[in-house]
Length: 159
Length: 312
Image (cartoon, rainbow over all chains, first blue to last red; front, side):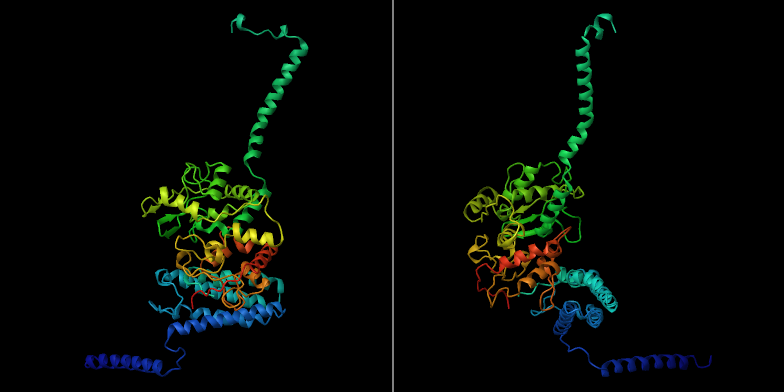
């Protein structure tokens, strides 16, 4: 190989370049999950979160404890996507996000993680079918899981 | 000791001597007991403190006096107004920088009448114009609770008033002309609509955010609770009169639940200042009894419905 040092370098660079091209092409041709309007996308996610939470409460009042787990799992998964839906400066007239999100990004990420943790806690508690334990989580969930982010980072809705 | 100065107790009749010894013993006993008497005078009863904490929660945890995620009641929260900028004060029992050296009456005077120790008027960002509707028993309990919070030595930040003659001329004139004046009840109502009205109007001071303000910045109580598009901290505060198109149409149970959990019937959850007062600090609206939350809800259903669409 000592006789062809330039050939070896060329092969390595060529392979790396091919990998990058393949990865890029795969990313472009993969399924498109988001619409491209990040504000609309995150509002859809929050609506889905709200609907899941409302349904969880309805199930609780109906005594359908175990069924709450699927709502909680939905919220736990959605929570993981929250930070990615708030790219720097994505503020439009339709957005209710506060600029504090980007000024206190670590706190915002932590609030999203907190939502995930609470949702997983609700999921796991609901799976036990223990109504009293689930009620204890549900009682605080809105304020602790959602409110702790809404309060500092969202302009309150007008209705 | 010279003999001339020596006191010969044998000269005192036995009965008198016994009386003197008894009196001295009684004095010593009383003297030894004095600290505990003094303590009982200054240490409030646990029930009074618990009631005070409840009142504190009903006032939303007096959150203006606590910066978010910072030390309870230590002040320093910034408020911008048309007159300039003020910072909430330290209301911990610290003697140097808080209210530790104030008497109960001085604290109550500040809460209800907005007067400092030196007679100076407080800027009515502190809502004394509605807190003056609080019953004396609730205020005494509230003060008892405030004294139990850990003291924090944190000097108050000076206000920055930008309007000339604001405090000497405009503020007294404004208070005389525009400030709403509540009348304190002889005792706090304990149930029914009267209880709900008392909480909404005075203790929980709902109108401070939910009632629109006129050009004078006084609350326009002819549109009580009709919402405020220019609320505190640039918030848009909803109309909570029972107007069917633009107001609060939730059931009483839903309102009561919202005040405890922050949960709205549509799955949304409270945020902003409402989220703050529900969560409170050491206590908040969430700690109100269900009876009180329902009393608030029932009272809200009785205020005149006012059509006033806020925002979109």
